[in-house]
Length: 259
Image (tube, rainbow, N blue to C red):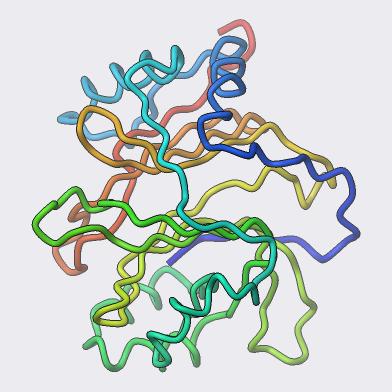
């Protein structure tokens, strides 16, 4: 499940205009990586370190990076563009641009349940959030398996909730990506990302994320200038008890100033 960074709802002013094309993010990315020095975190597995170091160099130069453009975009949750997708699965706990925030142990326990029991448990045990801005849909081979075709990936920002707790104060938080199998009506994982706005500091941020193709595989990246982090997620098996999901392959942070 997506992990959201949430704060109380406040007036949103000065939100930056999102790039019209994904590829337009390239110059901003290069600017951040020039001014800040990144290093791999200790969470990166030994077998991935060589790949991650090569990726960091290529990403800083925007070399061998192909940005994947969405095939649909809208500013409204209820835009007619989403109706063909929304009408295909009425049994999902999450709508196309929704997520549930759970305690880690609860989320892990739910993921081990049979598929037909998970949705009701998410509704009853977790907090419901819904995207309110910058909606996108991608049809892309996100699991890097051409044999099963392309996957539906939905993106949103500025999540609002909890919507299933009538007495709770509504708050805003970051959005992210969700992979939804619309044939089997199953949520097949997600990737949290940072919005280009700080809901805590109430100011725009130079933050970028997206779906890219690098060295023949698709990834989701998240670059946050505020805290100096860069993460690269890829579809794979990250736990023997959980089905394949999006998970971090590479993670970087910035060295202290002067380090």
